[in-house]
Image (cartoon, rainbow, N blue to C red; front, side, top):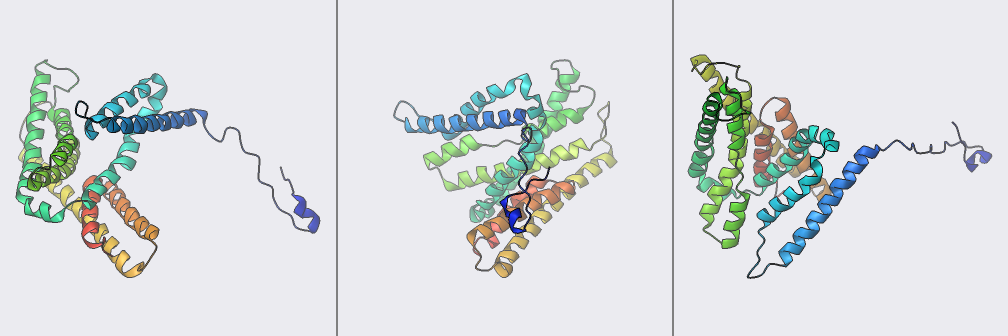
Length: 307
């Protein structure tokens, strides 16, 4: 329907804004958004109150408090009315929530301490994660094949190994919080922090490697399959790092030569968009976007921060 404003009397025609569609906002999604926003509000409120009440008899660690609030906040999301939300959670989590966390970890990484303790970090992060994955995966497979546990495929070790890789991605947030509050030796803190950030990326690469293995009803070591798995692991890790380094260097070049003396908002936008593009490009190339965005943050911190 065409409606004209009073300007038409002057010889000019203009279109009036159409009446808003009452169904343009889905009430179901509006209810979900409102519920989640309310949960976040009360979590922030109660968390601040708990921290302000710290004394000699009560101490609320940030990590422990976050775990408790997260557990309580998840209770309203367990009903049948939120099945559609649960179905979309993986996409939202890995596409929007995890990349900024790993980018911040790489950007805030202390390069001097990290490189000084690189041997210890590498030993714990790479061989340590692989050993943990294999021990946990094959232990679960043998337990499932013996009928001791259910829920894990007992006919093929593929699912158990994928689960082992997922569980090996430990994140010692609580440990780091305690170490930071106790002012322990910086070397110990750097080793644990460096291992935790590399460990996540290695576990993701292992998970992707195991997911591409063929299904098998028997355990056998095929030289070709073993060689393929090793090559896939190395190629995925190397290509992920290269993509992250490329976008990190690109961010440094753009901030130095193209947007010189730009507004801080523009600089922050350029850094964040290039970091997110590193994740998208790596994920599209079927490699680890999480490892890519971590190294992008590390390179951008070293070369682009001071531009």
